[in-house]
Image (tube, rainbow, N blue to C red):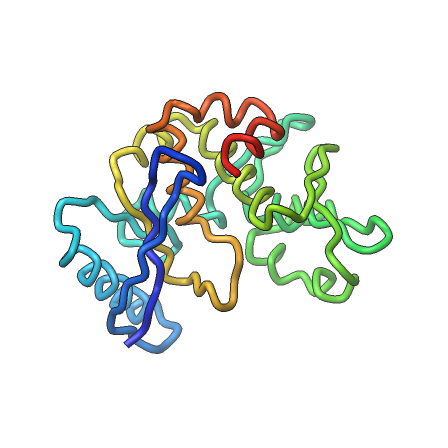
Length: 214
């Protein structure tokens, strides 16, 4: 048995709550094993919450929306160039290390290439994030990732409307003991902000996002 979080939107800060669910986990890296684990996790959650609509957000999701909303696939438009890149590539390229070192060339890489770039592990301490000349601190810990993902989703109206049909979110790849940022958690924040009628205010500036969400 394993435990994984399910993220549910709420309409007050921090706009998400977490429910830990115990389920049967299927070991292995194949897509089939991942999907079996997703089904097991969802069945365990829905057994106690039968009226909620649950969405897996990852490349292993069986729902096309869940695949599209993966940070590896969700696109964001860069305001200066009009270039489109994935949230994952934008996130990795925004990392600033000791001495102001930043690898903006990762904007042009695939999500997988950007995340696995060896320079990210050999360039010293992470000191900040810098995206389109805006700098973000390391605290709150998920501030920049949440801001980036929510802004990307907000600007894709079809996806933004569709996600509001769901009440809870999972990411089978996310293990809170090993990772910090989670696309399913941030998706829940997006829905929570929308239901609280605070989404437009939150994305109007990074300062407003920080004030409203945290």
